[in-house]
Image 1: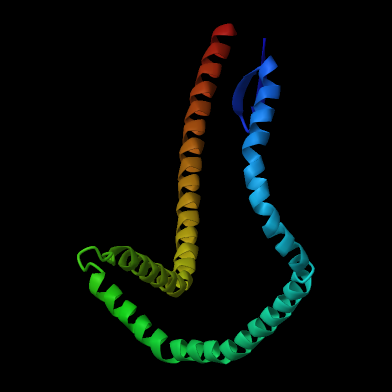
Image 2: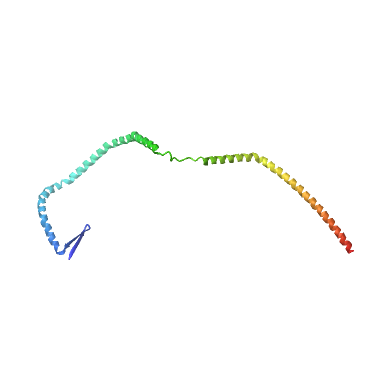
Length: 190
């Protein structure tokens, strides 16, 4: 039977009875290292009490130095920003504008189409001229319409009179004819 240990996704198979042997072998191999380390640990242990105050002191000194560096650096950064803004940026900007002007293709420039605008203005001019002509001739047109209406009415009256006269003449002829026939029939009956 075997025991499977899984640590950090590594599969280690150790025979069941072999765990004691491996532990013993590890202790035997570590004893010389531990004996060599014990004089060093005896010297390091008293120094361990001195480390926390040294760390605090180092932290304070570092914070002071960082503040000093920031105080020294801030005006220089401000001066560099002003230099870039006043001297370098205008030069770079003009260089980029010049490069853009040189790079822009002339053949691909959008052609301006003038005929739609010409058509618009021509239509507008025609509309204004038509409105002016209508305004000028509207009085004449009303007068002309009145005259035409009067003439049409006279013509219609004349036609009605002519038609009435013709109808009266035909009615008289029909009456005469009918009277003659009536007399003829009356003469036959008597």
